[in-house]
Image 1 (cartoon, rainbow, N blue to C red):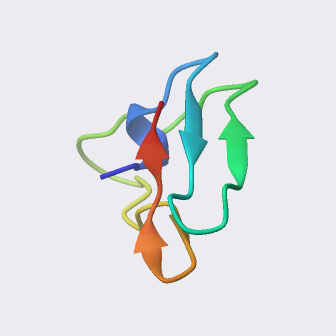
Image 2 (cartoon, rainbow, N blue to C red):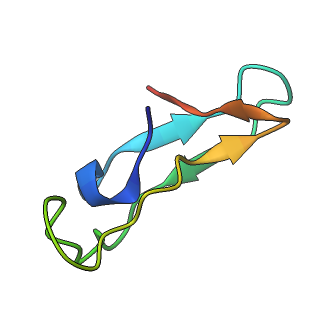
Length: 52
């Protein structure tokens, strides 16, 4: 699952259906554990995006 709290600078995520690619330039500042964290997975074309 592509969740922004786990993404690192330089990671690339893509959609297997349309080919959209997203590159992480600045990582999320969420702690990934407790409190205010991102919980929605990165999606495109109604499916989760895949890390290259």
